[in-house]
Length: 319
Image 1 (cartoon, rainbow, N blue to C red):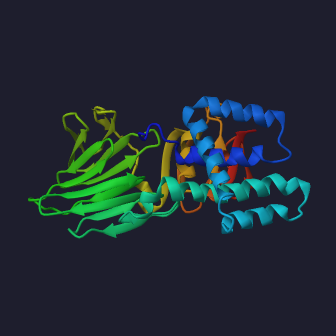
Image 2: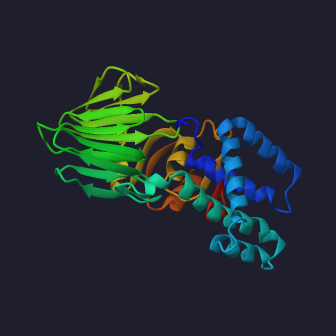
Image 3: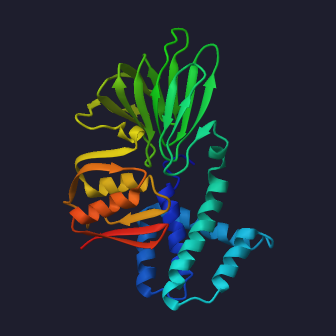
């Protein structure tokens, strides 16, 4: 299965959310219709839901499983009717989400360097190069006498390369490679299976699998996907490395794009309808270590409402 066929992390959280709602005694016909529409919107949705159901069923095969016992005890506690659904969503999201990533993404737990959701970290490599990892990112380092290779497993990295004329510095993903020619640059893996290379200083040779390498100059970026490299595009006034300083800077961008960016720094799911928010645009600077404050700022300045159903589920909709 390729990365294009795999459910994204957002889809996995959504699947856990739907499973919780469908197991709630208060489930409505409207809930079921919305779930059917969600499944039909993308084949990966059905796959995520199927695996979530299998994961939940497998807990019954482990009589002593602490997570299963604790969850069932929590559901057995009497609570007001109004809070039942929220408690079930929270419990199922916690157990199923953790279980999924223990099985599906176990290689990430053994990566040489990794960050949690909302965490950023700077790492000094053995050759003197410096790397910063963005939220929920992971990489492996493979240095030898001929080359320096960093494999980006997930997420995004910033790198400032130390000079070494004998050993090229290469960042590798499933989509291709980005070879430094003495530089600072960013490499990001996207949810749709692409790799975005953004050059901040000097030049990078970007190469999609099976294609010729192209040169990307400072202030440009390219996208590698399906054996093709997009022609380098100017980044203009954008600051794609602002996250290394804990900031999200946007200039006249769609609010849905800003919400998607903020969601990458917050555990759980931020749900919104892109079509419903169409036409709303945002300019500003937001702190990534306080996404709730950023969401509150958006609600104060735009005709939108931010609702918190649990710590793991936030819904944003127009007024």
